[in-house]
Length: 610
Image 1 (cartoon, rainbow, N blue to C red):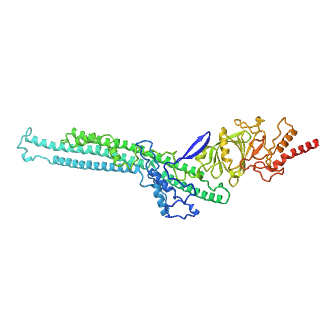
Image 2: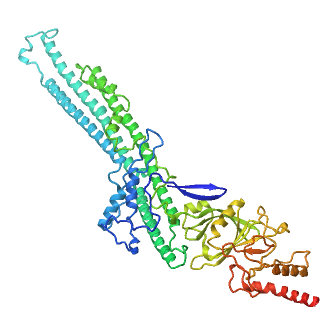
Image 3: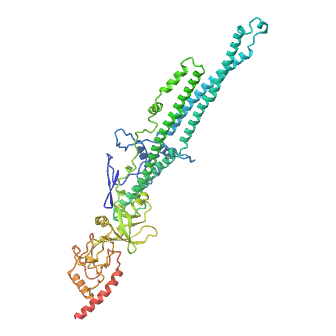
C-alpha cells in the first residue's frame, strides 16, 4: 500500500507492505489470461487484452481479502452484485467470463431479496382475501336462505279459524317468521361489512406493497449498472498499467544494454497510469460505498413499511372484525378473539429481525464496514517504475515579474511533468501542461538566490524550447529538487562572490539577478556585465589575474560568475576555446559577441603599457 507524506511543500512517496509476499522488482512476467491457459514468454505477449490482470484483483477485492477491521464487531464490506445495462452484443467465451466477473452473481442483491419478501406478503394477503371472500359467499347464501324462508312462510287458511287471532299460536308462528327475516338481514349486513371493510383494506395493502416494490425496482440510487461499468474500467486500467510497466521495463533493459543509460522517453508512462488507476479504484469504492449506504437505508425503510403497512394493518383489521361480530352478537366462541390476541402480542419489528436472521448472508449487514477510499492496494503499486523521484509545488516565473505556483512530478525514467496544481494532477494525471526529458536538459543553479534555470525542449509533436526560472518559498525544497535532478540533467552551479551581496536575487521578492553570466567553454571564467561605478580597465585586469591564477576544476571557491560542473569536472586547458559546452542555454555565438569588446580593450591596454 502506498502512503504519501508532505514536508515543506515537497511530497515523497513510501511503500508500506502489509504481510504481502515479496515482489520481484525486475522485469515483470506477462500476466496469465483467464481465457488462454498459457502465454508465450516473448515480450510481445505483454500486449495483453482487457481482463487479464484486473479480474483476479476484482475477485480478491470483492471478497475483502485486504480488509482490516477498525472495530471488534465490524464485518467485511459487502460483496455486491451488479447488473449491466442491456446491450445486445455477440456472446463470446471471453465476454462471458468478463461479464460473470463484473456481475458477481454470487454477491448481494438486497433489492431482489426485499422484493421476494414483499411477494411473500402479497401471497399471504391474497390468501386472507380469499378466506374473507368465501366467508362472504357463505354468509350471502345463508342470508338468501333465510329470505326464502320468510317469503314462503304462510299459515294455511283452512286452519287459521282454529286458533286465536292474537296472543296465541298464530303469534308464535309470526314471531318465527320474523326470526328468519332478521337473520337474513344480519347475514346480509355481515356480507356488506366484509365487502366494504375487510376486502378493500386488504386490496389497499396489496396496492401499497406493489407501489413499494416498484419504487425499489426503479430507484436510480439502487441501480448497479454504474458499479458494473466501474468494475469494467478498473479491470481495463489495471491491465493497461501492467502492460505499460512490462513494456517500459523491457525497453529500459535494452537501453541499458545498448549503453544509452536507464533514462528514456516512454510511449506511455506507467507513472501517470498508476494515478489514473488510483482514480478509477477510488471511483469504484465510491460507487460501492454509495450503494452500501443506499441499501442500508432502503432496508431500514422496508422495515418501517412492513411494520406500519402490514403488521399494524393486520392487527387493526382483525380488531374491527372482532368488534363488529361482538356488537352484532355473532361471536359466540374465542375464534376471532384469539386471532386478535396473537396480533396484539407480536412485538415491533420482530418479524423483520427474524427474517433478517435467516437471510443474514443475502442482505447488507448493519455492522458491515465501508471501503476506505484513501487506502488503495492494487497490483504493481510498489513497482519502481511507478514511484516518482520527487513531486511538489514550485514557483515558476512567467513574464517579467509574475510568479505562478505549479505542481511538478519527476518520473523514474527522467520525464518532468508540469500541472496547474496538485489537485489537477491527482484528478487528471494525463492532462499535464507540458513535459520535458530531463537528461537532455540543462540545469543552472544559483545557490545564493535559490533560483534554478532549467532549459529543455517540451515533448510532443510541436515541442518548443522552454527556459524555466524556478524557485520555492522554502530553500530546502529547491535544494532537494536540485539534488534529485542534478545527477540526471546537465548540471552546473553558479557560485556567487560575497563581495557584492546586493546583486543577488531576493527569494522572497523573486527579483532576478542583475548580472547575466557569460559562459566560457574553456571553463576558465564567466565575465559579468559591468556594474555601475566599476571601470572597464579594472575589470579587464581582474579578469587577467583570474586567468593567470588558473582553475583545476576542483576548487569550490570561485569569484562571482564562475561555473562549477559538479559531475564532470574540467581540467586545465589552453586559451583555445573548446568545441563542446555543457550549457545549452548560453551559446558560443553569444560568448563571442560579448568577449569581442573586452578583447579590444585588453589590446589597447597592452599597447599603452608598451
